Amino acid sequence: MAPSAVHDLKTLVLSRHPGILIETHEPERAEALVRAVAGDLRIGRFEWSVTTGLRRDGDGNGVYQTTDPARALAAIAELEVEAIFELHDFSPYLDRPELSRAFRDLLDRLSSPARLSTVVLIDARVQLPPEVEPCVVRYDLSFPTRDEYRQAIAAVVESLRMNGRAAVELDS
Image 1 (cartoon, one colour):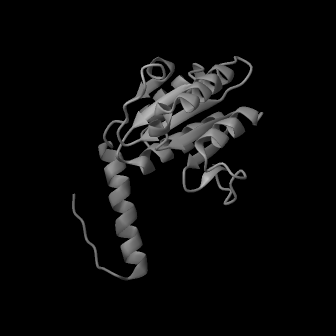
Image 2: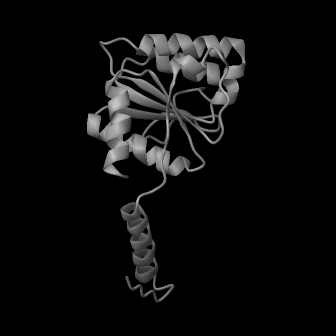
């Protein structure tokens, strides 16, 4: 992940923005960015999706019965940890008035200066309700840098060489 992207997102988290939106068709890059920021800040990272529920990074077991979006928001509110809570494809649920209110209440709770916690929405395409839009900061995930492309290509080449599935030779 580009150092500038990590720095930029880390600055938003350290500025106590309780809600950040990353609109992208590359969720893997967004996840890697959030993971890098959480690692730099030495805080926890939780992921949520409607299929897996809320779970701590690296823990295969989710928080019980949190595939329901309302239960997930309630669980996040109850957790007394400093963390980044990564919610995938969550924005469509915010059209429901009860979830919109619960989400805004959660962001109010997380904005406390005593706790470094942030919700990061990662969605491919987002149209937030008007009452939610001012509560989040949009973060633009820029295209990969040349170095990131080189690293990705090098990793693929190395994998192919190690598996013996292809002979690969690259020049500059």
